[in-house]
Image 1: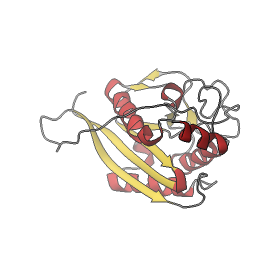
Image 2: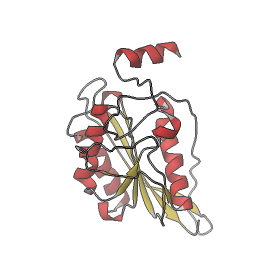
Image 3: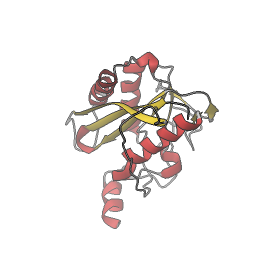
Image 4: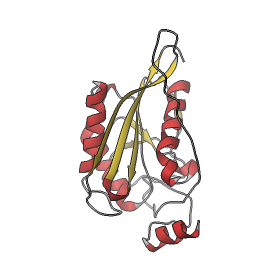
Length: 205
């Protein structure tokens, strides 16, 4: 859609190269296309797979297209998700970042993540694989996070080669296999609309 492409380009958010979240040379989003849905069922003794454990949302309304530089709205959404799930930050095994590869967005999310979780929880952004799928970015991230839990795999942050030394989150540059019981998925949008979900393993996957 040329309106979308021209709009992001006029905001100087569009990169001519593949998306490189958290990279020192990141210079904007690459737009992708996707669609998805999640079917939620009541948990029961025979249900196996991944469950929605908690959710949090906020709207910091800091700026039309730029998040609060300290990540205040994102912090609130992640904290509310933890509260909703009755979990502590130490119980989260992996964070699927919003990770757009714009300079300001990645820096704000980095501050927010490290304020809530510290610098050690493994994180990655899938936008190097899919591009920024705009309205479908949230569900795309959720589906990737569900697959990560199901297969015990933390995906690498594709195209990120030199992590920005000014950012502190534990960015996965290589895929790694390990049991994942709880994952957080972040999706942040224009106007400071922030949503964080907590997903968890139920039963043998």
